[in-house]
Image (cartoon, rainbow, N blue to C red; front, side, top):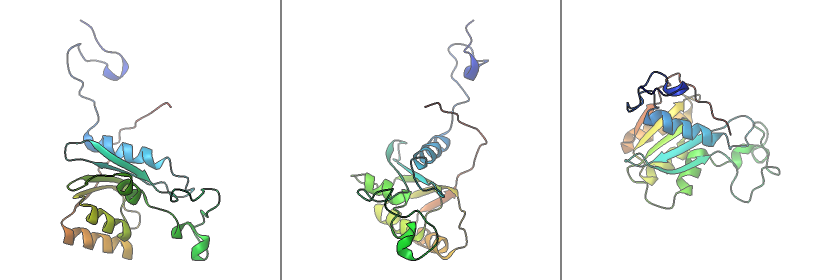
Length: 172
Protein backbone atom coordinates (compact mmCIF):
# COMPACT_ATOMS: atom_id res chain seq x y z
CA UNK A 1 0.00 0.00 0.00
CA UNK A 2 1.47 3.40 -1.05
CA UNK A 3 0.69 6.50 1.00
CA UNK A 4 1.31 10.13 -0.02
CA UNK A 5 3.59 12.17 2.21
CA UNK A 6 3.06 15.44 4.13
CA UNK A 7 0.06 17.26 2.64
CA UNK A 8 -1.62 14.03 1.60
CA UNK A 9 -0.62 12.13 4.71
CA UNK A 10 -3.01 9.30 5.39
CA UNK A 11 -4.38 8.96 1.86
CA UNK A 12 -4.10 5.65 0.08
CA UNK A 13 -2.75 5.81 -3.50
CA UNK A 14 -5.71 6.08 -5.83
CA UNK A 15 -7.93 7.96 -3.37
CA UNK A 16 -8.81 11.55 -4.17
CA UNK A 17 -7.48 14.24 -1.84
CA UNK A 18 -10.10 15.68 0.44
CA UNK A 19 -8.15 18.64 1.85
CA UNK A 20 -8.15 20.73 -1.34
CA UNK A 21 -9.30 24.35 -1.17
CA UNK A 22 -12.79 25.40 -2.29
CA UNK A 23 -13.48 27.65 -5.27
CA UNK A 24 -14.17 30.57 -2.92
CA UNK A 25 -10.89 29.96 -1.07
CA UNK A 26 -9.00 29.70 -4.36
CA UNK A 27 -10.40 32.87 -5.93
CA UNK A 28 -10.16 34.96 -2.76
CA UNK A 29 -6.55 33.81 -2.38
CA UNK A 30 -5.89 34.89 -5.99
CA UNK A 31 -7.48 38.28 -5.28
CA UNK A 32 -5.37 38.73 -2.15
CA UNK A 33 -2.25 37.65 -4.02
CA UNK A 34 -3.01 40.23 -6.73
CA UNK A 35 -3.33 42.86 -3.99
CA UNK A 36 0.25 42.12 -2.98
CA UNK A 37 1.32 43.85 -6.24
CA UNK A 38 -0.02 47.17 -4.95
CA UNK A 39 2.61 49.75 -4.04
CA UNK A 40 0.19 51.55 -1.71
CA UNK A 41 1.89 51.64 1.71
CA UNK A 42 -1.44 51.60 3.59
CA UNK A 43 -4.02 49.59 1.67
CA UNK A 44 -3.43 46.66 -0.65
CA UNK A 45 -6.60 45.52 -2.40
CA UNK A 46 -6.86 42.80 -5.01
CA UNK A 47 -9.66 41.62 -7.27
CA UNK A 48 -10.27 38.50 -9.34
CA UNK A 49 -13.09 38.14 -11.87
CA UNK A 50 -14.26 34.62 -12.74
CA UNK A 51 -16.68 33.15 -15.24
CA UNK A 52 -19.75 31.13 -14.41
CA UNK A 53 -17.59 28.06 -15.15
CA UNK A 54 -14.97 29.04 -12.54
CA UNK A 55 -12.36 30.26 -15.03
CA UNK A 56 -10.27 33.29 -14.13
CA UNK A 57 -11.04 36.09 -16.57
CA UNK A 58 -9.09 39.00 -15.08
CA UNK A 59 -7.31 40.35 -12.03
CA UNK A 60 -6.46 43.78 -10.72
CA UNK A 61 -5.01 45.64 -7.76
CA UNK A 62 -5.08 49.23 -6.54
CA UNK A 63 -2.48 51.48 -8.12
CA UNK A 64 -1.85 54.43 -10.38
CA UNK A 65 -2.87 54.39 -14.05
CA UNK A 66 -0.38 53.14 -16.64
CA UNK A 67 2.20 55.85 -17.30
CA UNK A 68 1.76 57.54 -13.92
CA UNK A 69 4.92 56.82 -11.96
CA UNK A 70 4.63 55.18 -8.56
CA UNK A 71 7.58 57.35 -7.54
CA UNK A 72 6.21 60.69 -8.75
CA UNK A 73 2.56 60.58 -7.65
CA UNK A 74 1.64 60.91 -3.96
CA UNK A 75 0.77 58.03 -1.64
CA UNK A 76 -0.35 60.34 1.18
CA UNK A 77 -3.75 59.87 2.81
CA UNK A 78 -4.20 63.40 4.16
CA UNK A 79 -3.70 66.83 2.63
CA UNK A 80 -5.12 68.76 -0.29
CA UNK A 81 -6.82 66.50 -2.85
CA UNK A 82 -4.02 66.75 -5.42
CA UNK A 83 -1.47 65.95 -2.71
CA UNK A 84 -3.09 62.62 -1.78
CA UNK A 85 -3.44 59.27 -3.52
CA UNK A 86 -7.23 59.55 -3.72
CA UNK A 87 -7.27 61.71 -6.84
CA UNK A 88 -5.07 59.27 -8.76
CA UNK A 89 -5.39 55.64 -7.63
CA UNK A 90 -7.42 53.17 -9.69
CA UNK A 91 -9.14 50.64 -7.45
CA UNK A 92 -8.58 46.91 -7.86
CA UNK A 93 -12.12 46.27 -9.11
CA UNK A 94 -11.88 48.91 -11.83
CA UNK A 95 -8.45 47.65 -12.91
CA UNK A 96 -9.76 44.08 -13.14
CA UNK A 97 -12.71 45.24 -15.26
CA UNK A 98 -10.49 47.35 -17.52
CA UNK A 99 -7.89 44.59 -17.85
CA UNK A 100 -10.50 42.32 -19.47
CA UNK A 101 -11.31 42.92 -23.12
CA UNK A 102 -14.43 40.76 -23.39
CA UNK A 103 -17.93 40.44 -22.01
CA UNK A 104 -18.20 40.11 -18.22
CA UNK A 105 -21.98 39.54 -18.22
CA UNK A 106 -22.86 37.10 -15.42
CA UNK A 107 -19.33 36.97 -14.00
CA UNK A 108 -18.38 36.86 -10.32
CA UNK A 109 -15.96 39.30 -8.67
CA UNK A 110 -13.82 38.39 -5.67
CA UNK A 111 -12.34 41.43 -3.96
CA UNK A 112 -10.46 41.75 -0.70
CA UNK A 113 -12.36 44.90 0.38
CA UNK A 114 -16.00 45.91 -0.13
CA UNK A 115 -16.33 48.03 -3.30
CA UNK A 116 -16.78 51.79 -3.10
CA UNK A 117 -19.69 53.47 -4.87
CA UNK A 118 -17.58 54.33 -7.94
CA UNK A 119 -16.46 50.71 -8.35
CA UNK A 120 -20.04 49.53 -7.72
CA UNK A 121 -21.14 51.56 -10.75
CA UNK A 122 -18.46 49.95 -12.93
CA UNK A 123 -19.28 46.46 -11.59
CA UNK A 124 -22.97 46.91 -12.42
CA UNK A 125 -22.27 48.42 -15.85
CA UNK A 126 -19.90 45.54 -16.69
CA UNK A 127 -22.67 43.02 -16.03
CA UNK A 128 -21.00 41.32 -13.06
CA UNK A 129 -23.76 39.55 -11.12
CA UNK A 130 -22.01 38.42 -7.91
CA UNK A 131 -19.55 40.16 -5.60
CA UNK A 132 -17.67 38.27 -2.88
CA UNK A 133 -15.78 40.60 -0.56
CA UNK A 134 -13.17 39.90 2.09
CA UNK A 135 -13.80 42.74 4.54
CA UNK A 136 -16.00 45.78 4.88
CA UNK A 137 -13.76 48.07 6.87
CA UNK A 138 -15.74 51.14 5.74
CA UNK A 139 -19.19 49.72 6.46
CA UNK A 140 -21.69 52.47 7.22
CA UNK A 141 -19.85 55.16 5.25
CA UNK A 142 -21.83 57.02 2.56
CA UNK A 143 -19.82 55.28 -0.17
CA UNK A 144 -20.59 51.77 1.08
CA UNK A 145 -24.23 52.62 1.77
CA UNK A 146 -24.54 53.86 -1.83
CA UNK A 147 -22.81 50.70 -3.13
CA UNK A 148 -25.20 48.44 -1.26
CA UNK A 149 -28.20 50.40 -2.52
CA UNK A 150 -27.05 50.21 -6.14
CA UNK A 151 -26.16 46.50 -5.90
CA UNK A 152 -29.60 45.72 -4.48
CA UNK A 153 -31.41 47.78 -7.14
CA UNK A 154 -29.37 46.17 -9.94
CA UNK A 155 -29.85 42.62 -8.65
CA UNK A 156 -26.18 42.02 -7.92
CA UNK A 157 -25.73 39.30 -5.29
CA UNK A 158 -23.23 40.39 -2.64
CA UNK A 159 -21.86 38.26 0.13
CA UNK A 160 -19.00 38.33 2.59
CA UNK A 161 -16.31 35.71 2.14
CA UNK A 162 -16.30 33.28 5.04
CA UNK A 163 -12.69 32.72 6.08
CA UNK A 164 -11.98 29.04 6.73
CA UNK A 165 -8.91 29.61 8.88
CA UNK A 166 -6.69 27.75 6.44
CA UNK A 167 -3.29 29.26 5.83
CA UNK A 168 -1.66 28.99 2.44
CA UNK A 169 2.10 29.25 2.33
CA UNK A 170 3.82 29.94 -0.97
CA UNK A 171 7.51 30.06 -1.62
CA UNK A 172 8.36 32.31 -4.56
